[in-house]
Length: 105
Image (cartoon, rainbow, N blue to C red; front, side, top):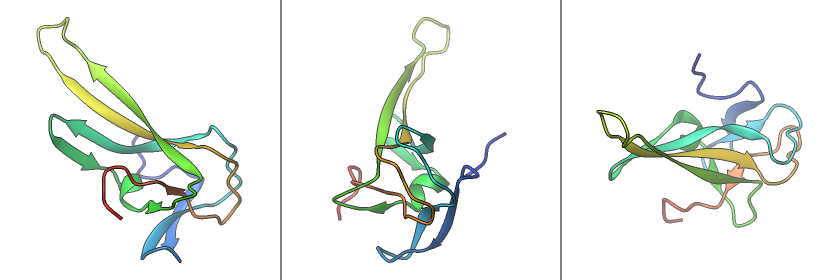
């Protein structure tokens, strides 16, 4: 079943900008936190998780790009998906941040 945020995360007021995503518990390095964006052709779709993550020049997460294709079947499709991965241990109540690559800051 799809959930906009994993149980370990919540949204609350950010010191960076507006609302942000925060850890409800300690999150170890290399933890997969969920999908942030999908791209079909030139259309980029931001998920709820991706919509509340704030930028940092010293982030605690990064996006991992996954490419999907199915050119061997009758219906061809190609799309990209980005997942959020913790690149360091994240403390309880710490804001989840990443270095923006899709948007100007």
